[in-house]
Amino acid sequence: MARVTRRGDKSNRPEVRHAPGSIRVSRKPVRSVRITSPVDGSAVERFATAVRGAANPGDTLKLKCSGIESVKCRVKSDGSWAMPDIDLAPGAHEITVENLDHPGTAAMVRIFVSEIPAISVISPMAGETVEAKHIEVTGKASPGRLVCLRLGRKTLTERAGESGSFRFTDVELPAWGDQKLMLYYAEAPSQGNVDISVRWPGLDLPALVDPVTRSPLKPGADIVRCSNCYTYCYRSTWVRVGKCPRCDVSGDYWTRTAPIFHTPRANLRM
Ligand SMILES: [Zn+2]
Image 1 (spheres, rainbow, N blue to C red):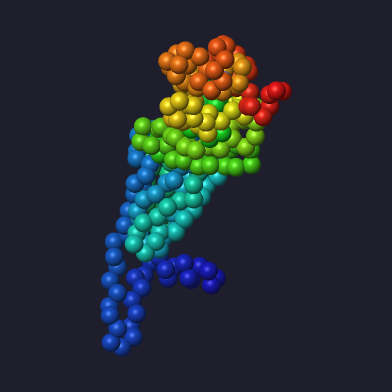
Image 2 (tube, rainbow, N blue to C red; image 1 turned 45 degrees about the horizontal axis):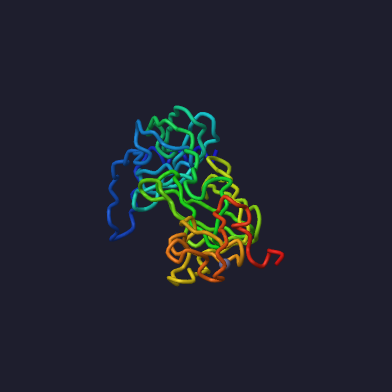
């Protein structure tokens, strides 16, 4: 009985207080429900979708969409609202938001959800033998998304730019041998993720300098290694001097196609 009375009071009569000297409360028109994001007819990638909009302050809204459980939120005093994130399967969807306090007022948008684009690594290449302890990892991902790079026990994060490019600089390889780099989206770790392996035999070229020019040796540059004293130098230096610039023995050199080129001096049986 009490419930029926309360409901009747609330919906049928304007709430006007009659305290002495009080301000008369006029009924404001109910603000209609609007969905501002995502935009009707838009295509979105399959990250958690944030649905936002405007409606009558203080009212409770309910979001319905096939394939997911309904979610609710309350409209803030400034008239804005934001639903808890929802995860929609790829395909076409109709999202309806209705005002539970004012039945009959609702808004609807149609969106198309596409698969999350796969992260691609441009550098280093999968299976590559790297020549430095600190490497740069570059690639492409969905624009603006946070990309995680896990290597050993460390996880680094970088945000992909407007074009989708990302760049992790100064990534330290934790150990010699095969290393697994795992790249994934912070928001959806199991979608669009990629693992690549690189090999690091322990040679750290940037820590070495050319014996003649004293310039640091760049990974991937035209560098040779003396087969007698195991010194590295630029091939141009070797050619200019006519032999190994360090040991003066007119021997031969290895290029990086020879496995021993990458073996650190400490690992050689000398
Ligand atoms: Zn030498």
